[in-house]
Length: 280
Image (cartoon, rainbow, N blue to C red):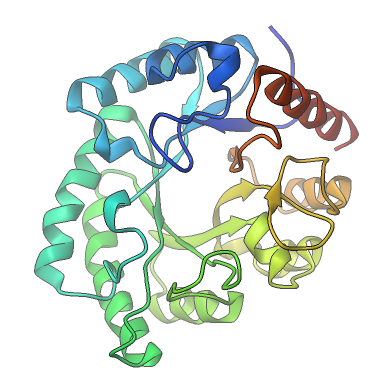
């Protein structure tokens, strides 16, 4: 089994539940088989945006396989069918019902990080929606904390993902600081933040205490999209060094698809990722 310097995690589905990062290398989309492949490749963990859409039996099998192979379950998205709708800034009763499913999935799989993204409601002010999201996050975090689960607020890039509520680091920081809750932290997504013009090594150190989880993607040379680590314009050694310097010991969740949708594309992705790991 390959040895990595950094604790990378690969996903079981980013754009759809049957499109894992290494679909072609694995030969099938079955999530449990993919976990076995990731363990064989030396990954430290697994991420699954669509975990709550899988049956309870599959969620438990994913968690059991991850534990047996000595890996860690990373983050997943709360309510992935409604991720780009105002699920966190809407009615409390609707959120509470969906959050039951989220908590159950986390407990079956062993996940301790829930990714909180939410859409923008054009009929309401952004300030009002952020206020409601804060109230909902506090209530959900109180419940999640009892199971050791953290809610991570993600900043998105408006050009890449239009129509989302939290589109700047400042908005996320104000929300997190206003809540002042140990169960609500920042999902530090290198792709979105870099596309928003942030200098990653600097903001890692500035926001060290706020970072709850890290997702990694490179940025294309034209700045328009997410690409494989090592295939874009980001300078990875200072980024990885900054994370080490602040004592971050969690997973680095690889959140992009291969540049080429083929076995050869996945082999190339893996080679670039190993090169970034070696230099970082």
